[in-house]
Image (tube, one colour):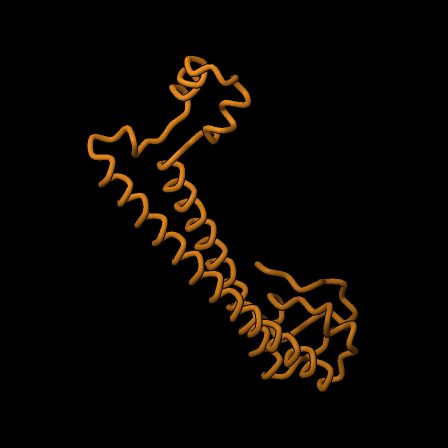
Length: 159
């Protein structure tokens, strides 16, 4: 048995479908910014902290020097270390700023999604759906068609 849903419920399902896509894009932006942040930070130093090297390799200066040869800083080995440090600094700042911006957008989007879900469930219930049916509705299916199988077991899906 199929049930027709209102235009408003279909519109809300389409809004959720769009917002789920936005969330996926924001997640990609967060991942990209995190990777850029890690790469820029690794240019400053990759390896163990000098104190950790001394603990692992012993206090003898020759042993610590040998350990340092395998770990180090890309920027300190650059022809112009000061310029390399400054470039790494600004890459870190940009990546961190991008990360913060995407995180804030995702936080705001989450609030919008929560509100839209509440409106969507309320609308379906006003259309005669039970609360369980409304909560188990397949948003993707409702966004693209006016039919939803009654009593379906689909949960909120992101496609």
